Length: 174
Image (cartoon, rainbow, N blue to C red; front, side, top):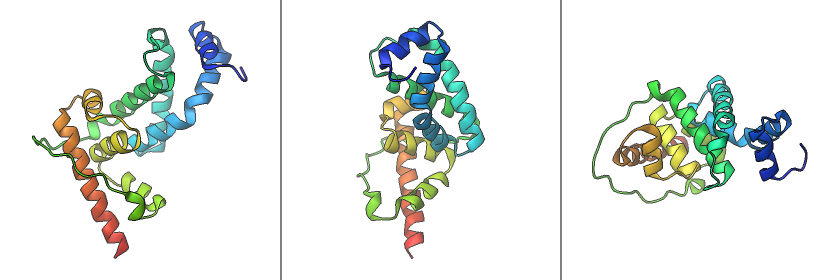
């Protein structure tokens, strides 16, 4: 369904039109695969998440109310599917009263390619929260709800992920 507006694609998907479904998938697959891979850190898992996530998208499309952009709604479904995929691999440290840390200008520290590798090397819990917060723009409350953890735990894991990344990047510069 070339050159259709999102509303036309959405209406076609609601009518189970395969061309509209393919158009929706094609429109979002690259961005959602990237999100899936960043959270799972595994090509096979990311492919599984993409497939499972889009099945959920198509099954639940009728519940999309338009209160957010369609891409944001799909993004949340894919993020939750990726987190579900790695849930058994994640361990969280529980702390309370965590202060927000100052933002870090990563580009001044290291090249982007090495930063991506360093992020991928983080433990699953750190990597998933770092990805959701710093890269994908989710808020701690949203992350906590998605992962069934406290906001404090989300903040703690982000702070620890940043520290670990800084240490890895310092080692690389030396």
